[in-house]
Length: 527
Ligand code: G4P
Image 1 (tube, rainbow, N blue to C red):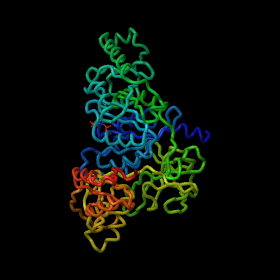
Image 2 (image 1 turned 120 degrees about the horizontal axis):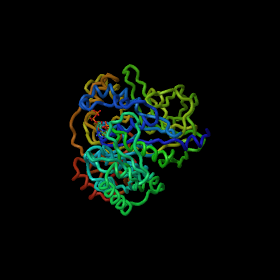
Image 3 (image 1 turned 90 degrees about the vertical axis):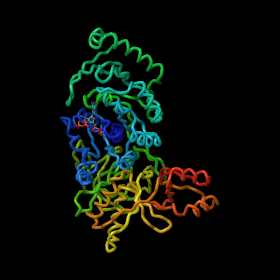
């Protein structure tokens, strides 16, 4: 197969959802269709057990396992599918945000009963910012939930999307009878079995089929007809270009657990979802079909063995081919590096790979050369954009508890921040260090890892911060000078040296914005 065909057949995407909506179940069913696993349960058993959410030791243990599910690749209808794991637990969302920079599209899973939930809103916002093509899958139709039209409204309003149903449910919960597939114009009946392997389903190609009427009853057919009329009247027809541009989002209904509506989703996905897209670097737009290799690090996974500080850096191939034992330029260090055992990922294995194509993810063993956002190329000085930091939600001062070990502590903090575990802010006023995390549990994880991997002891102290905002201003503007003078106490530097305003309340942030009109406050580090 030629280079261009290899690119065209790749589909690299992430599944995002609020915890418990069914992301793991859906992932598993997709793997099942791809023949990558034979029975459901394999991915699931790797999942962090819900009971362990307050037990960071368990998370530590699971960290190793989750390397295996970071990228799940399989072939389906001759397409190479790469699913990037976007950890759904609240404490991992920083990781999730970063993974979104490496996907070419996403599938959003929504629980039919719970509707749009908080984490989904946040993640979809990031996708919208980057115009990532989105498909919505409304899950758990075998349970009682919200009315389909109400849900579609909710998705549009809360997620600011413009939806077009590709399938429509016939009944719901106890009364769930099946799904009308608007994309293929056929109907599938739900048999109610809890299918863990791919089973047969009954399919009808027309709403007028007498067998169908016998199966679901005249009343259901009349209702479905009315609903489909409404769908046609209210929603635009699917337009692939609008979907690819991030302006229209197709919606599917189904039940991942029951394997219902999943194949329809996958069949449509492989047809409409984008193959690897051009990516903007600071210098220029890079096309996947360019021959020279380029890629960027979007995730770093520390090894479980505390005695070996080796880590796995996940690189998304953007252009050209990544080849084993070939020297590549590490742009930030201006240094050539060669990799003798790059890993590629399949269902749940990782294997040494000789050649990887755009869209693929390569795992590189690293002893501390990489940090998130680093670019690797065949020689060109490119810097890939698009791995911004978002404001953390929890902040604490970090103190060194063992003055003899301050070197170890700073090295440890440095490396953990490179991994993207948390963010570090250094106060202008006194140089004190503040750690910011997305989930509160991360503080325990950092403390534990600093002690076990770097023999450094630390403790935390509360600090009253509501949000971190990245500051942009003309350095000579009087407004900015005044802002810096008055708000000195709240100013810090992030790890890359950017100026950050640490607001102590929503009110003070608004007041500050209103007072210093020439200063811009951004919610991400890239603007
Ligand atoms: P997550 O990765 O998004 O957190 O969700 P996950 O797939 O783990 O699913 C959360 C719960 O929802 C699981 O139940 C799962 O079995 C259930 N679920 C997923 N899809 C469906 C569906 O289509 N219908 C119904 N009725 N349930 C569904 P659990 O009891 O929390 O876990 P488990 O004991 O089944 O492992």
